[in-house]
Length: 147
Image 1 (tube, rainbow, N blue to C red):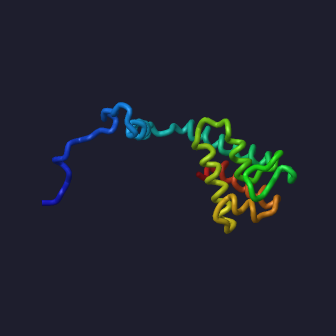
Image 2 (tube, rainbow, N blue to C red):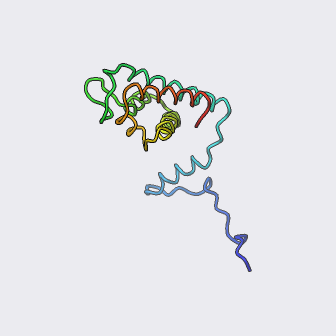
Image 3 (cartoon, helix red, strand yellow):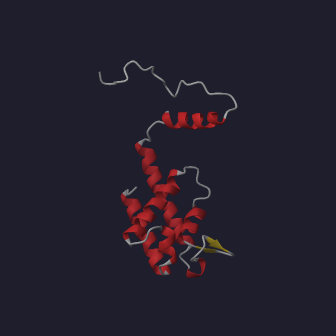
């Protein structure tokens, strides 16, 4: 007789008791919040896409001056930032973690299309103008709705 699981008890993560003061309590709360999360509305997705575009434009503006751009480190005193350092700095006040993740994903897609394994690798092995062109490509992709 094949196993179909009909006789197993039903366990609902949303109704599970949370053990008091255990390490599993925090994980169970997080899992419960992810499980119960409702899908994003169309308006939220549109707002997030616009926020990704704005984040990429802000990061691009931070390194648009060649004297503000750097290689080999995320940030150097006083204001030298690489592409990822600029993206992180521009995202420091955002509440929605999905926005910087999406912005990074789009920029990483551009880096990979150019033959690099990461945004950092692209930044450290490209000229300033090539990095700015990568940001322009990422902004165009984000406007089109890529990730």
